[in-house]
Length: 340
Image (cartoon, rainbow, N blue to C red; front, side, top):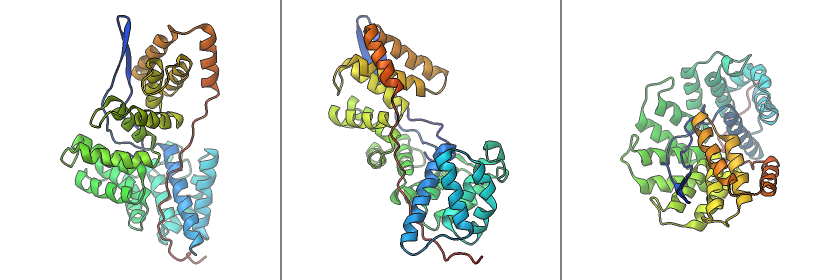
């Protein structure tokens, strides 16, 4: 689920294994909470900037320290250079103290990341301070901040672990448009974390996250539909969701799609496409075990291809560029601009 990490990816890869002369696809589980890493924070911050722009069209134009803070986040988001965020921290803090919800979110993120996380001139890491600033921002309607509160409470980061309160904040965030929080709420119901296990409710929230373009939810739901696990089997919709997630760069979905094309499950049987997605999945694999598993899939597919087909697949994988799903904005109200 969403903030400060994206460590626990949804394990929805297919295991593509050969049994004698046949191959089979075996599903793993579904439903782990997600966290966004540092680039994930920038995407969330960009969503908050969009909210800032939306608010400005309603007559709440950010100015002074808030404008400087927002400009720094925008620059960092576009260039992946985090130095502007560090330099702008005093402006962000000043605007946050005057009640600006976007700046409060940015200050919280700086405290969460700390100097050691590439935030050179910013503050030392302080999870308690991060939680407090996320809370202030969330209380003004920032659904990204509300999702962060859910993460902190679910994992006991800077505050005692409290799953009931985590669910409350995830619910607020999801209802406000935070697709990662919707996925995380689904995971709580799927795993019985702080709530009774309820797959019907879990699927409802996964669907909401998938509809908002969240790739982990698309990948997880896609597999469930393909395998008929917890849902009626629907190859067409399962393939559609898997392809959407794969196109966004989800390595698990890419691995699934490789197996689907190799076997003709929900999509056309196409070994070039199978190898393309297998190579992309291997490129995005995290950890030695996943890399070995994905490489095994690649090797099995390669056995069934000609050299010309392998070359075509390699070239197509090389030219692939993931699509980007922009997070939906939350639109917290801005207070009047602080005096200069």
